[in-house]
Structure formats: C-alpha cells, structure tokens
Image 1 (cartoon, helix red, strand yellow):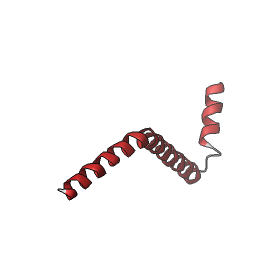
Image 2 (cartoon, one colour; image 1 turned 30 degrees about the horizontal axis):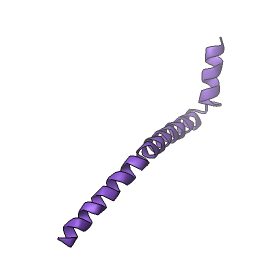
Image 3 (tube, one colour; image 1 turned 90 degrees about the horizontal axis):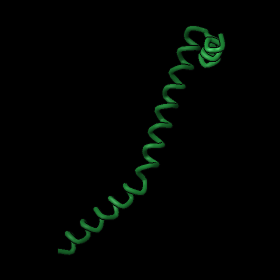
Image 4 (tube, helix red, strand yellow; image 1 turned 90 degrees about the vertical axis):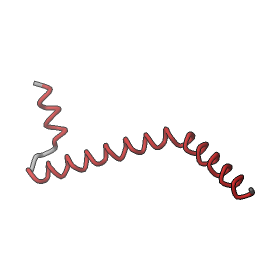
Length: 63
C-alpha cells in the first residue's frame, strides 16, 4: 500500500519535472545538433582545406 503510494508520488514528480524541463530538453537537443553540424563542417573544411565554409557561403551569396 505505502509502496504503491510512493510509486504514484514518484511518477507524479517525474511527470512534473518532465513538463518543466521539456522546453529545456528541446533547446539542449537543438544546441547539440547545431554543435554536431558545426563540428562536422569544421572537420570537412579541415579535411578539404577550405578557409572557412561559412565565409565561402557568405561570399557566394554576395555575388
């Protein structure tokens, strides 16, 4: 009986925390993905010896 109550309260706390942290989770996931993409781009730029991919893109869009 007490164990069931404890589990229910624990579940409730978990749900509340999840709801509170949900936007944060999304933000962190987005940041992680962006960071991965940036790392990949820098790896590719180093591999193929580009000066900087983003700079090249900006220069490309200027003309």
